[in-house]
Length: 341
Ligand SMILES: Cc1ncc(COP(=O)(O)O)c(C=O)c1O
Image: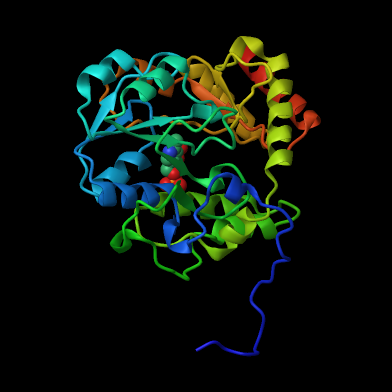
């Protein structure tokens, strides 16, 4: 029964132009959207049933969680110090029908040798993990692309695979009107004067810890926002900010680009492990929140290159919320911290 009258929920103005959601190929059918990306990947695995899912040794723990929930066996492949997949290894180890996931790390697509490998091995099923990517500036290279919008734009939750049609009916998502996944983002949004940092930070930590694989649907709030957020302005600001950081700290940059053709997730720097810990603490002390992608890899320790990088990388914020003056502040704090004995 459709109700008439009573109090209002939340009303959005009509979308005037296609938003970042359609740019990312967000499925129009809400049942093909999930509360997070790992749930979307798990639903795809449960539908396609590949014999093995190959993951890069440098990956976050949530991705093998998706495979475990779908009972898909996981194996890992090495990456080099630039995070490029080891193609010779993959070529020898993979078998027809296997699924191979590779990541557009920090927003950047893998280099040409991997893309040539993708073109050659038509017998494999490739998933482009675009969870770090607003736009790689390059053609999509996978049969599917995985998205986790909350890592890139101000939406409280959500994840999907584009296209989503391969997700079979029993694995599609269900409405779940609990608001726990949205709580941290809403607390921060309403804290206009940023007085309640401990509250929303704690809420976010709690929510990230509770994050799991499920059939919960992406919130309607997130879908409506993704239908309206403009991709061009987001992309331009991120590139400008990245460039500002690249100009002021070339010696520490992990990525070689000055003004990238891709849209960056953040600005990763590479520091010796002890320095990274100190710099991270100093930045936080100054109210600058860097991210670590990732310090707790699920791959075996024998993947030494990946585990080495996991101790060294630190991602500085350079997203669309900020401008040049903010980037100068980030660079100043970082430089001072690195120089400190
Ligand atoms: C590269 C990458 N892929 C997938 C995921 C999983 O995303 P979600 O947290 O939305 O499940 C993450 C999360 O950290 C990620 O960084």
